Image (cartoon, rainbow, N blue to C red; front, side, top):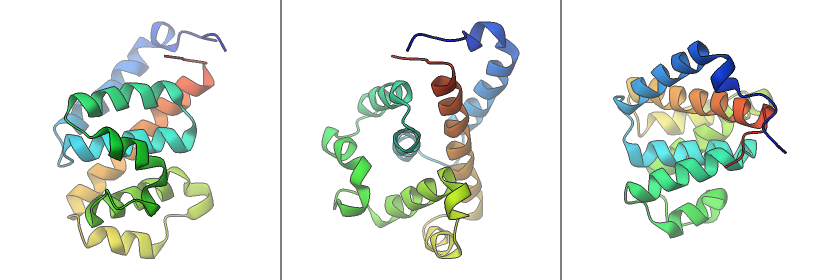
Length: 144
């Protein structure tokens, strides 16, 4: 699929506003290693190959291991992720699929065992932001 609409050129103010959320995330309580895992996982769920490539490259540049990134799609079966990361990945899956899952209490309770309230809000903002970027890229045919 070719680019349907160059949304960056047509709505630069909207893109700048979304980018401000990314600026917030970069300075948030969520470390970059976890951030990239969440961004890649969200993009996997949504099927955004462009975003997967972008954030995979960022993760590798940040020192992430190829094996962990390769295992990310099947994180539940992998022993490569900590309990803290597993809680964040479960939250990511459920928030990304919110219409189906409704972010169940047991997933939230598990998250609370590893993250402060501020970190939970920041983590959810990472997920929200990535879902927004995925929807733009997929809807308008952005490819790597």
